[in-house]
Length: 193
Image 1 (tube, rainbow, N blue to C red):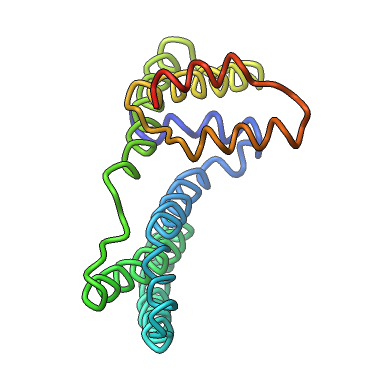
Image 2 (image 1 turned 180 degrees about the horizontal axis):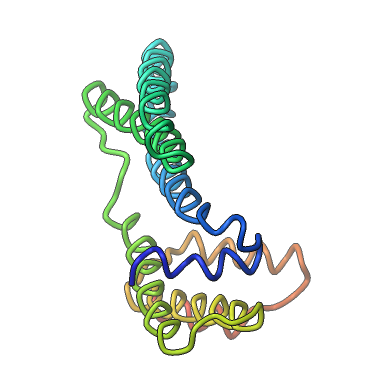
């Protein structure tokens, strides 16, 4: 199940001329995922008033990203740009993570954070198996796979007991704002919280 299997889905939205761009999207999305997953560490640096470290991290990550872009774009084209851009997000957060831990001895990641990621990876793996049996032919297939993905993801989230009481409270808040009752959903979630 290689990343090349994503190309047909990409062409549904952007056409055959942009088929090679899907891998860059994957790289940049991965960079953003890491960035937002570890961004707590830079917030810790702000709280302890070490903003000069954030500036230094940004400068280091920018210089490395520029060097990678200059080096990789002539060789790899748009793929090199994706690698260079993603490297910025990864480097800045790894530096912040190391520094925030060294200063506060607090590690901002919990095991519970890995559960949604692993749930998504399992769901993607299952969808990929289904997609290999029934290839994506049009937007209807794609919408079907998205729906199946969310159903599988939700089931795995429940099995791994990833949801917390705070998220249950969030559902209650959404109910009050929308004027809609999610009683059945809340009852199912309560069994797994």
